[in-house]
Amino acid sequence: MVLIAASVMAKGGNALVTRQYVADMTRARLEGLLDAFPKLLVGSEKTQRQHTFVETDSVRYVYQPLDNVYMVLVTTKASNILEDLETLRLFSRVIPEYCRSNEETEILDKAFDLIFAFDEIVVLGYRESVNLAQVRTFTEMDSHEERVFNQIQIAQQRAATNMMNEKVKEIKKAEKLKKSLRHGGGSASSATAISSSSSGLNMASKDFGSTSSNYSAPVKPTPIQPMKSAAGGGKALKLGSKSTTDDIFLQQLKSEGQILGADSSSKQQQLAGSTVLEDVTEQNTCPVQFKCVEKITSVVTRDGALDTCEIIGSVSLYVTDPKFNTVAIRVAHEAKEGGAQLQVHPNLDKKIWQANSLLRLKSAEKPFPVNVDVGVLKWRLQLPDEESLPLALNCWPNESQDGCVINIEYTLQKEDWELNNVTITIPLPPATVPIVSECEGAYEYIKSKSMLVWTVAVIDTSNKTGVLEFSTPNGHAEHFFPVNVRFASGNLFCKIAVEGVETMSGGEPVEYHAETKLVTEKYEIL
Image (tube, rainbow, N blue to C red):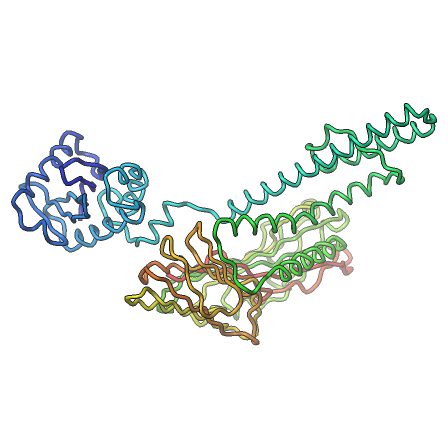
């Protein structure tokens, strides 16, 4: 199939929106082809059919009437008419997706949105393998991480503004106090105390950001804390502001019309935050720290068959003390049994690694950098079938006259594993509010992105299966795919762990901390 152009034309014959896909055709030639189309329809009985076409000596017009407009595809006569009709159906569904009506004014207002959508369907005259939901996703180019980052930035700006207002109030109070002391004949010692406390607090306030640095600090009768305490206070403010940021973020999401599930996860987030803080504190006490991380990229068909699945893992070293920048790491692994391909850093001795599973520098003159994450070991692993995946999803959309009923069931296939912060994202038809009848865990309807987010805090043997059932008043099966899954786990596919750390010369043991984590790079059901 070679598509020359796609056009939305009015009943009177005017071209409202036209996208040309063939570069070797002039504008005058294309306008001539479009001007000839209304003349070919005069007196034709085919205009009453749902899908029609007319031909000339050089091209074929495949079109569909849509109320007051025509959706027209101009193709070569050698193109496959069945493929042309299938492409025409997709083009015809794009128009009501972006336009509230089929009026000429509405189509002209949404002209660029339609052109962008047309470009996702056809490239250089050839049809792309996409559906309507994918076209919507590609044209939106929405980033959840960017949106969260912007919300956090707004919350931080508001917090800084509130802090500035409080400082202004305190400064005004301090000025009033100074004036009262001057008029009341205050002693020189009290004035000296005021001056010293103001300067001390002004220095401490610099840690909170440039927003409040233009104001001098208020008078306080309490003793001035040293600079170390002020820096610690800055960190406490940063950690404590997370709850305020989350509250503001949730309020803004609710104001946009989003629906939150009945099971609140605020306590789980607080526990997760405290756990992260404890981990950081524990790691900071150890001079040598490790991170064993695996990233899984998997694509599964909606029938449950595994399309692709790749595991990429790495071990990174973080040294906080220069005394231990030449340590040797003893690693226990079962890479051969799992089929993983291990590779060590070029600065490490491969012979010692192959003989003793010991990661050791070739030369002490090239030590590990301090306070920098350095990769020392990496591996790659391919999963053979879908049964090797930790989590399986069974998606069943059932279409009916009243809409669609969607059943999604998860199954933990590795029963000795524990999955944390499981998030399953299901796309929805535009402007459709789902009605959830059954849910294991919590759910959230994001109106701005037309998606339903299903979250389960922990999946283990106690809840190795779970069901989400909801219905929509419209839509079809294609609207609810692809389904994206995200989770984290402390288990790894490649059985690998840091067994011990020792000095390079004497072999003396060194205190260390190791963290193991599996994350999803891409986990999708098409």
